[in-house]
Length: 130
Image (tube, rainbow, N blue to C red; front, side):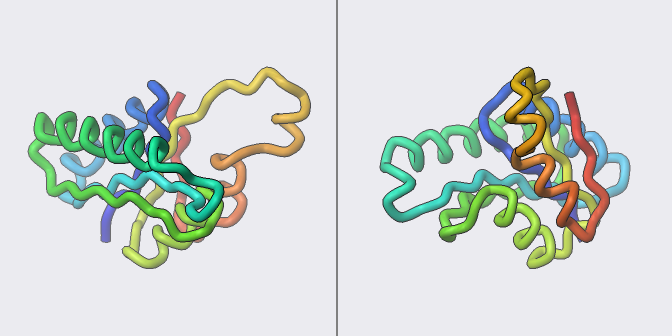
């Protein structure tokens, strides 16, 4: 069992990482950080490099917490929301932690986003960190 945190490079996602690391330390659980890209023609080399940089930054932050930690760059042809939900089940995550941005657009509120998808489809509890 582990704590899964999804990272997109935003300040909110790194706050979610810190929350997950604190929970991991408190519970004695491994923290797994992921960054998801669609893949194929929807993803270019620059996005992959950015994803690797995000995960490298996460590794540096995690060192300060002294918890078991691993990262995964997922490029599996799925939307980030689907990837998070599926990967959480694959690794036996007991909780999913995501950063949440305040959305101002009515369209974005109606359509939702990654966080909304995960909340609606995950089998695990989901913590959204502002």
